[in-house]
Length: 482
Image (cartoon, rainbow, N blue to C red; front, side):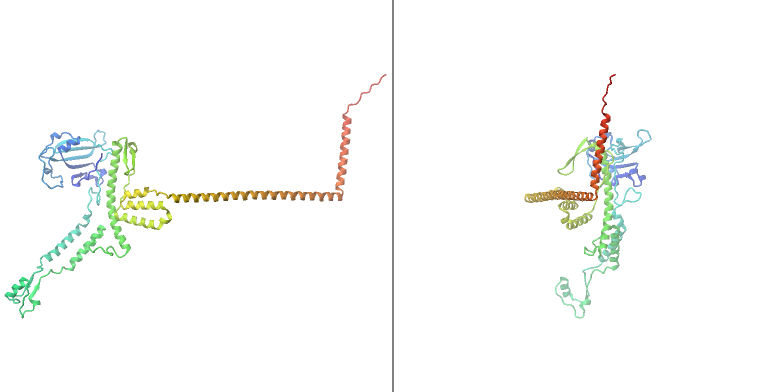
């Protein structure tokens, strides 16, 4: 199972020629403390019996940074701490002119490990993330580096103010020599009531030492340095108190101040997130090689999925979402306002999505999942009323369909009647036209002439028929005897 260790940058030596781009580094050396027992447990180191434990201890290595300043050291050899150097780099191992990544580990002058890099991505197993990057530099700088000069000035001015107050005899009381006699002086020292000499004005005879007044220029200098520090970091200090006007008198001024803070924080978070993404890509590359054929991965407390190793090969788009509490709070407020204004018109599903997102922004993932997966149980009476309402609507629709069918049939019948009446009227009109035509033909003799023509034609036809019959009949043969 792969692990990720945060290394102390003082114990990591990076190729200085890479100019801040770790992918171009030719080597990286990691210096770490270990023991003979730990090296044997790893099972990948050899020549352990040849290590000189006395000359390679933590205290004898000046280049190794050890956070624990104690001088305690185990006396037995298995637990005695020693310093090892782990070299990750590239070398032409096969003599082909192409370099391959390899790792070599040594303790003092003893080489205990040398092999090809076991990581499948063929890169050095290191990832860097600068807090504030510097151009063409391997190491960045902290946010406090921007305030170094301001802090020095503030410290110097503050020390001067303290010196002024420290040199004063605050609280000491001085009296004039002739202001009190011996007995009253003793009463005065014991804090009792006393009598002073009449010839001495007590306002002039007694003097109370107090702190001297600090020059206004000192306070002005501190305020100038604080304002400059706020402008450099984008973080509002609470030197003026947390009031309604602490960030400005207008909404625009407050928004500008908060934007400056959020931008700087987001810039830092983005660089750290980019480092996490690079680590994720390395782990994905290792998963594609070292995992079993199938692995069961837990998504939530109740949801598990099976991942096949073959599905992990190739380039995977890895994204990491970052945010700040201020940005999440602003988003949650906007979503809450949206929920108030649109919940009544958009329905319960829409409200459920917004509530789930608000719970996610409030860092309540269990509640967010419960809201997202919640399915309201319907009321049986309400559901029955809905079914009856639907049945009523269906019956009304069916009634309207039957009425529409009946009206359509009646319309077709009326149309048929209209056609029948039209046909009757047309027949009557035709009969009337025929009577009128017969009357006209009789009056004009047209009908008589037509009848004569018919009779004549019939007579002619009969005559032709007779002629044809006579012509087609066979003639009788007559015989004569001589």
